Length: 232
Image 1: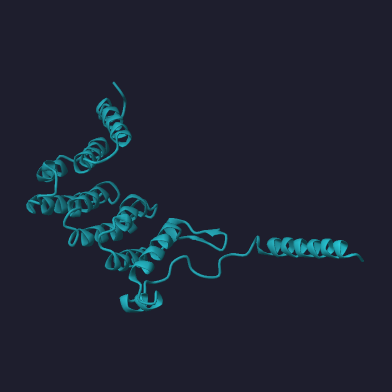
Image 2: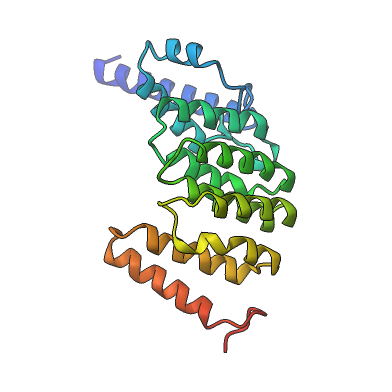
């Protein structure tokens, strides 16, 4: 057999082997859980050879791809939210200035189909707010929103609103002082969405023109809707 034919035969064998292995893995499920309990701060730091920022970045990537393991997609409702929010707090301890983790918690994991799990996210956001002087009001507002519209717990939402108003936070927009009144009036989805959009507008003066235009269009659309959800 000539060298060229031998190389071709070797390539065919390798490709056939890859095909067989791929077919054998089609029905194989992930052999490890999608999420494990978070390690201690010391163990986490040691695993990153003392580089806390490296651990933080790797952990954030993991939080963004939880459930995608070994070709299997694990539904959000099957995650252990106690472990999940434990990871959030651990990552915050390595980089408390980053907003990535609370944003993931508030705007992704907070909308789990397993409604009771939203309470874990609420507790995490309230904990995060205690050491985030600049954005703490934002996490309290989001926790209040989840309490009202995800848990249907008006009493909890009112408690968060009263705490928010009593803090007199210089970083917070003026309307937070009126949140208890909104809660007592039984705030609807449309009004809640308007408040959240306007808070983003007021608290982010350096946003791009495109982002501001998009938010303005969303606010105008909500203002044109009747409380029932029908447009005028």
